[in-house]
Image (cartoon, rainbow, N blue to C red; front, side):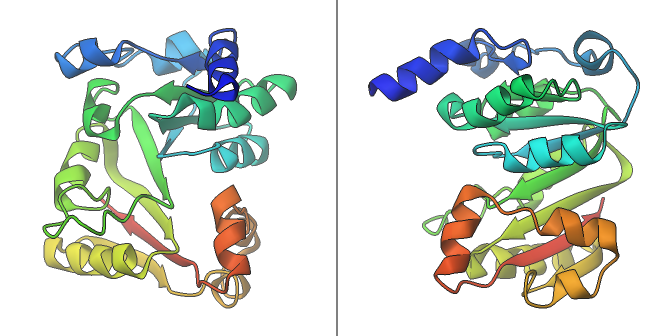
Length: 227
């Protein structure tokens, strides 16, 4: 275990916007904060957006800055990654953003029906060895999990550099007949110049890895669909 990771894990425990339930208890079926996020965490009834697989939390923090009238929760299993977002939001006094450490396959144990308004999937692992695609966060299996707690008609945003995940998502959404609102294979070169200013600003947020991949010439893909 690296000293850097341990330091970040310990510092996460001091942040009042970080939630780290026992993974074993979650695996055993225990629920955590289900139906309580508005009251117990944010103290309001504003809409909640999830960023699943949030990494360093760049999107959760950027969205929280832009939309103080909304709430945001970044979710990732690697606490040393979202430490950066948790620390930044604490330093800036952002009260509308929190971070949850867990595995995405258990996400339905944390939120009640209709508790979530939107979901962002930012640069999810494309799982190239998963031939059936069931481990991908845009698979019908995962979308069915999201539908247990996202409001009817809620939006899901997918941003990825992976052609595999992008094409798989297109095919899965078409097969399941979900309504696709935006579909672009060139976010920064084309899409940001075609959408309204608010969405262009959001899409222009670049994660740490997105900066690296963009510098290598990879195109960034984006899909927004309704469930």
